[in-house]
Image (cartoon, rainbow, N blue to C red; front, side, top):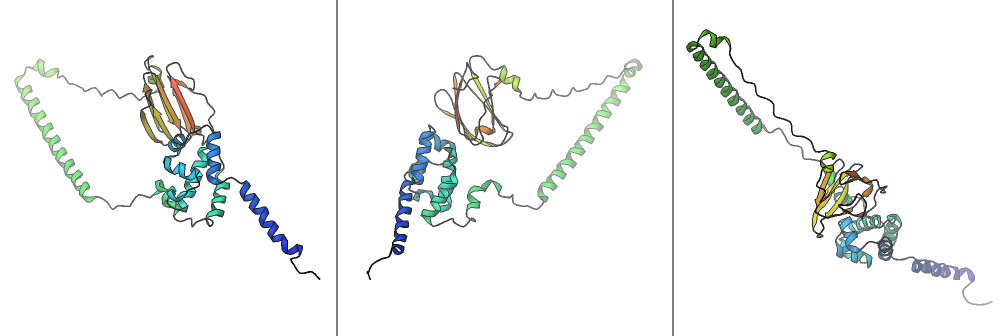
Length: 281
C-alpha cells in the first residue's frame, strides 16, 4: 500500500495549469484594443477625436489601467466605445473585464451616463403671466388699429368734400406687394460655389454622427454631432479635412457632386477633399 496522491487527486491541479496557460495566451483588454487600433491605422489622437474619450484615458486603458475611468460602469462604457472605434467586437472584452473585476455591475447607474439625451422635459403649468401680457398687447393693437382706420376715414371724407365730382369719381388705391419669400438653400447653391475654393456639404441622412472638420491650416472649423436630418457646409480656399464618427449615416457632396462611397454603419472615416475633387483624399 503506497501513501501519496492518486491520479484523480492530481487532475484538479492539471486543470488549473491548463486554465492558467489559456489566460496567459489571451491578450489583455488594453493590449487587444491597442493591436486593433494599430491594425486599423489609427492613432490615439484619431480614436480620441472619434469617440470623445480623452487621450490620457485611452492611453491608460491600453495600459490596462482603468482607475482613470471613474468606476466599473464608466470603464465598461469606454471599453465598448473604443472597441467599436477600432472595429473590434466589444462583448468578449466586456466579459473578460467582468472576469477580472468581479462580474457585471448593477445596470441602474448606467442610465444617466449613456441615456442623458432621453431625459424627459419637466412639466410646467400654464404661464398665466405671459398669457395676460399677450392679451393686453392684443387689446392695445386692436384699439390702435381701430383708431387708425377712423383717421383714414375722416381724411378721405375731407378730401371728398373739397374735390370736384370728376376727382371723386376715380379714387385710387394702393396695394402692397407681398415680400418675396427667402429662397431655400439647395444643391445648386453648392454647385455654383467659386471654382477657386473647395465646398463640402455633410448631411446626416440615415442617423446621427459625430463630425470634425479642419481647414487647410489644420484649424478646427467644426466639432460636434449632427442629428438625423441636419446638414453642415464647409468651405476653404484649398482643402477640407473630415473625420466621420459614423460614416454609414452620412451623405457627402463635394463641389456640388455627391460622393458615392459605400461607408459601413459605425465606421470611422478620415477624408480630405480639394478643389479638384470629388475624389477622397
